[in-house]
Image (cartoon, rainbow, N blue to C red):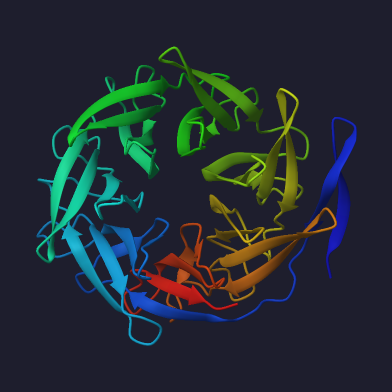
Length: 400
């Protein structure tokens, strides 16, 4: 059973949002467990290479003496997956890598660490494969006021190989930044594109994406007109970057505190998740679409906090016309979170719970911590913060 109601924005009927959870489809298997030298607490979206291997980051653990996290690889295949740490962080190279990694055409991996090796504000790193091992190079160390502090979310790169990301705090006003690392033949230079001011422009950025024209879209967890977060746009003109607010959260029936980055469809519509607010106060999935020079926000789904999940986290993944995401709590298996899918038919969005996790201690993991990825055949992969014998996290696979 579900109850649907029309959604009205500025007097216009723009869609229908549906509440309550449909039947749960249990198709989950575990392909990797953490806590044996490969790291602890994977918290970021996985990256899949062309061979079907997965790369990610674990916030803690590893084989270094101070166990400040790892970059890991999960490889093998359908029936014999193997997990190993390909890099171990220490006080000399930074630590607490929670933003995941991306890969360039040469096979190099790029990511961020929340603890830096100089000023303690984090860094941007590169890992290059070399004779069966991976060589690490720090591309930039953050230092708070000058350039930001504590990078969050995953990096993005443009066609030239330049890198872009956000810091959660620091910068000119101490409220976070959007930054760029320019690659000139392997020599990297750093620049702040925007420093947030904790006013109507938002603060505490959560993640970004870049479209084909070079426009940057992102979210902030707080700030904006209502103080409950924003979706923003950064555009470049004449070498200068200008910020515009596309939506401020906290309005009537709206979500609040958006988390993670954004998805974008072929029409340029943006999709994301807000951790709170909505019809039941348990968070929403939303869409932003253009209307002339303006953007209109529509709530596609409001979570009830029950069997359908509670407080969605890390945005959404857009795949095959559907939206996929996670909540770290709620669900029908004891409250350890869910993996969900939203599909549209006739303007109505309906949620399907793909898997409900038990509370920590269960064999299949608990507390999914990042939006999943979806391969070409529709198989869903993701990570949980807890699970396995030591409750140090797992990589799961859900077959449709």
